[in-house]
Length: 138
Length: 178
Picture (cartoon, rainbow over the protein chains, first blue to last red):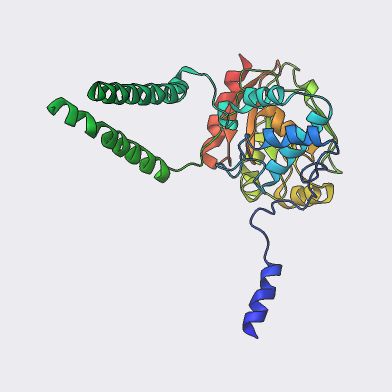
């Protein structure tokens, strides 16, 4: 019985991020009618960082700011704005921090160079092995 | 041969370095204060409806009127916003003009908030969907912007205004006069 009560008590609990009584913005949790536009918007939302629940994207976050931002993004996409333009608009206000997409800033050069370096090292290793085996055969 | 053996250790060492960096990174506090990049730029001009039945609406297009002011970003549902009310009242008493924007709020709630915590504001705009907040590069409530007489954002105070911040804000307002 007490377990049952406890179970129902769960429904009385306020969700942690219910910060405001206002209903969510129109396109916070509603997809755009055009699937191509919705795909664009979703792709962008997955790479925009939530300001409240940092380390989550706004697509994953329940924070009210994130839902407002989702709606803002969907409405802009619906008006024909390009995702990268919206990203630039956000970066202009919040800095690179808001975007999960790596930039080409010098600080990230090692990140871009690492795959090439590793590929090169692997290639050199494989080349050495093959040559040695060939030498051994002949 | 010796040299060869040494090379064999390189991947392990690289892996260990990665492990140390990654584990240090995991333990670091990830929550950080996100400063607006709009400092030094004009306040974005947006017309907002009145957030309270007792106060005029807010248009941020009319902020370049020659004298600095504070733009307080708050909400009636935000607890630290209530806690900073006495400090805002003190600033208003000292002649500071304070405009405000209520984020994701409703008029009856703002009215009740003003009745309960005092009303140091000149105008309050209702930002039902955080639009102005995004334009400002503001990342939460409460936040307070110092806007100079030309409508340029000069300073952003993130979080609650404590008693210790009043003098600092007065100083920022004086700096904004020049």
